[in-house]
Length: 152
Image (tube, rainbow, N blue to C red; front, side):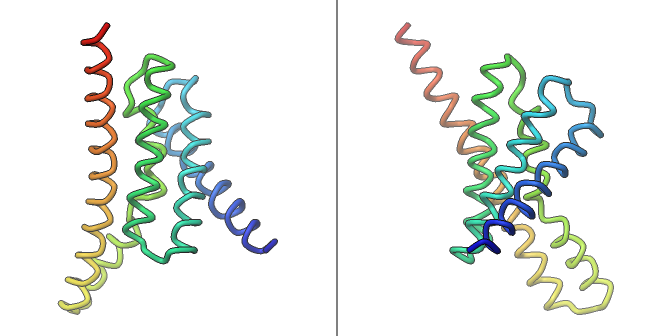
């Protein structure tokens, strides 16, 4: 049990935090959003790690972690009156399938065509899960907000 807690907090929260923090600093985010973006990036990666461990489905883990990132990004964007993309980008960095892209190109260069197709398909599905989650949350928030504005 202790090993799982160390794994999720150590690998998930801490590594996700520093990855999002570094990326946020590299892309020069506004100072008041860097710490929160990094914190929620770490939380999102820890959530991804927990879902992947317990359910074993990389696509579902990626989708629901991306929903978490997009949801808190929309909430923070409204609270701090900033665009949601400022909070989405650092939070999603840890979920982007960079290793999958690397392995896809490696299979192509090794002339392993079937491995290239398998790895490329998996990578594209992961990227589509991220995009679908962000779009779903964005559309839901805009629909709900427009209904509240009409009633007011």
